Image (cartoon, rainbow, N blue to C red; front, side, top):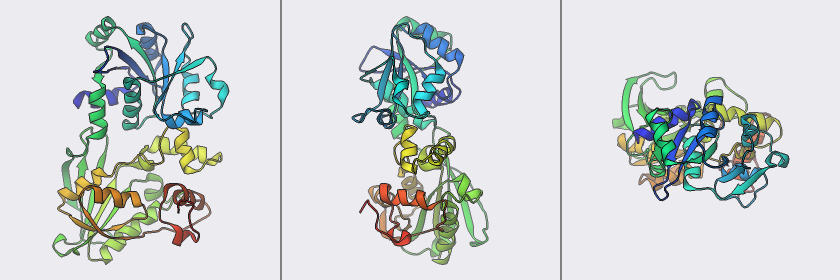
Length: 371
């Protein structure tokens, strides 16, 4: 796992890494499209034994005219064709149009290609990479010179899928709030060090209701801190704490899952696409992300460490209910929690109801298409 975590930090710095597939002798050199530098591109071109490929998430492939794409896609440059990083970035997350793919051959991706896409998502980068096969001698040369580190497909799979079970409770302190004078903040850290989550314990746990009021709140810098009108997150956060306090206490889990798990940088990119006409779901897909990249197993583990076994869940999202129940925690009931509608957030909330199944019909006043 440590090697995988180091690989993520290298990718965020634009440094090339090597991905090995245990079921194949081939290793692939990988550089991220978003952060790749002239130096890392030069390394790729110098060490590749075949033409490099641009690897994209299936959501982006579908946006580029491959409606059957169910897995990541590989677009291979012709032998001898120069690789222009600016063009790669345009293909990976610029305005989608067919002319950009001229001269690129679509090929079936290998396990290392798809692992690269998943690792980039985990690192909160655009899920697009330049990859190329390299021979064993090149692998040894890059490792010995410390130009690149290597990580296996299996290690990446474990890193992406098994963060739960190794969450560390790091620090805690009492932080009185305006609506809940007795509130204790407890910080949990994921093993890769990229994400830290906070549990707010409101009131005295000894006197909490049998079904503990719980809200899972994904961080939203723009809404929670600055009062953005593009969403209702800040109001949901404050209303959630107030509701928990008035019910006799409970837990709010503040989860580091900005932008439904795509990170702040990509969330702002998605906002720009929404301003150009896309809804929130299509904007995320245009960047290579699914409608919701969050994993709520972390919330389950936080509740387990806090000794919470039965909850009254404050949410409009049925996925949260299903995730908590799948984790073995009883959901006694669900309560809706809303912010306020305005001219800036109505389209966003309508898309969440119609396309993501959020239970907002009573609030929005019409039945959603998801029903």
